[in-house]
Image (cartoon, rainbow, N blue to C red; front, top):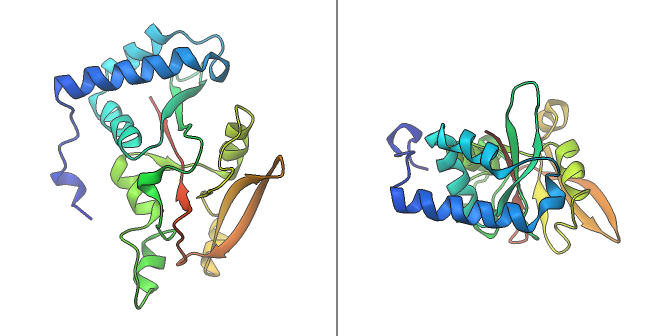
Length: 191
């Protein structure tokens, strides 16, 4: 993994304009995800924070299809989450965290979900956030997504993931060092 401090977290003007166009189109196409929120207000916050825009670019680049799913009226922040139908393609085949990655003796995945999220400047969804996202649509019908794991479960070597099957959202467990081609992670970003 590249040292985070050496990464240029600013987009070129053309990348910025392309991303804003993509986000605005998605925003307008999926108004049911963010009723009562206006794009101009979201864009004003994005324009003020180049690093958050870079993180959204990373979410988009890895297949997350980020979209606004909420607004914190107290802080003024907008919540973006990965809204791709399946767990983002560019973020699959990852074990849960660095400790799990280092515990593997052979056939190590490229990275971990926690490390990848941190490098992107985003956070893994919590189980609660994952369930809230599922209220906005049907996600992970064929894939699954790692979610933030409580310390007591992680201490025992496990990690949790969620998916949607049979019109129901399920939460499961696995060894944190496991990884699968159909399991990735969904992230969130406050802007």
